[in-house]
Length: 604
Image (cartoon, rainbow, N blue to C red; front, side):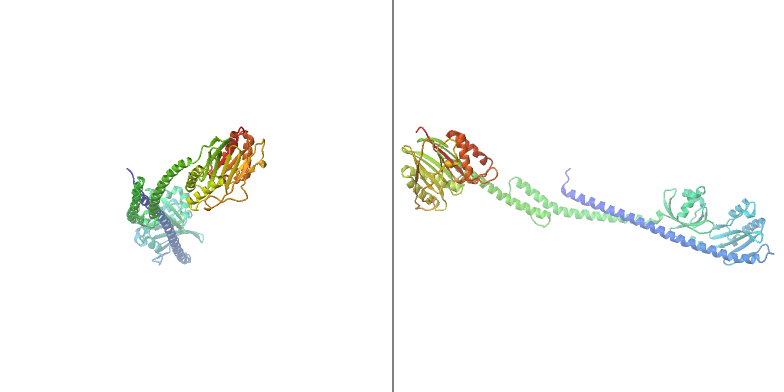
């Protein structure tokens, strides 16, 4: 089953929100529980200390009161048994000198339970019965409920006396009558429970908390002196304990509370938190559905539009509402479609234009003669390379009964417009040659034709030469073109031997510059083996090997090397072309490049 983006986003939002809420809830509850535990321990310990101090003060006050009665007893030695009954706040005080009398006291107490609130004197009897001599008895205390029975053994005036007094503790009544979470008890160092308020006994402590075993008093003593400790009951429930030492008879006041009782409200908290969690997740889920529906709907519209565009249908309307990322994407996509439509139109137009240029290139190629020819005693070899599909350079040669004509021209710029001008030039030259006129007149006629065609908007330079086959005189007219070179026949020639074919002092204007421009000619006598080099200014748009502009010295060096290394005319032409190739390879030309090599045959 394919899961859509909508449900992926909703699931991500819901799961992330749920995990975040659960994590926050767990951290908050744990922190609250930890703080609550510390508060309970602190409160219980403060209460234990306070009540222990109160019980200690109460016992101290009772002891001081008894001591005041003892002074009265020892001042009257004739009465061996002095008894004060209903002494406030002490229930009774009894003093015994003999062991048998002490046993009788218990019998009397047993008969008089209601008065002294004695529920059992077994502990006290057990101490007396196990002791062989009276002086072996130690001070001690028996606690029954809220009643305290204190016995002390003293040596006074050469005799041994047992002092026995009891009273009902108001502190214990206050403690044990309170109803709260805390369970309180008085225990000794052996774990014996002396008094409690929740039915606690030594057996119960031992059964539920093994730490209260009398056989491990050392461990129990450490716990009781710790003041704060936690024990786990037999049923696995945790209990929080605090203990405070009374200061008499190794008694400890302990307070215990069950974590379950204290933290019972957590069940309510968990229940309410669960309800809140469900409500929050529901709200997040519904909100996610609303938001994602609005967002995904716009993305689906973009998807539909993209599919239409992929099939070539650019007639697509996209809603660009909203300033969020989806809205910006919709605007960008709409703009992209518009630009693609324009681009395709431009590409179609460009393709059509390239096809037309290709046709124009083919047509222009018909304007040029064969690259190599031999006519009228001249070897001719030419080269043309356009900077674009169509060029503005043009060259031509022709022969009649007496002369060999060679033309080279360079229109302003390059491209289609320049190519059209060269076409007009070719047509004009074809008509001019039929009139068999002089070079000066021919250049004038060509100027008039170029001016009429370009209406003065475009011009061209041109060099016209006419070679007399019988006399080897070369007459030439230069209309502001690059000056050709004459290379005389010589072995190991240098550039200093080159002759530039400058015109007369009069500088001829470019073709098409003025309709009535006048031109003058010059001539030179050529010898057998002489060579001529015609060229256009495209050479000086080339780049040398170190990105240095191609200058005249580079051209002269190539001509010298080609002459000396090429040996014959064909070899020189081939060497020159090969040397020029690195400048042309894998580089776009800045301008059209044309050159013509001519050599006068020696056998003419």
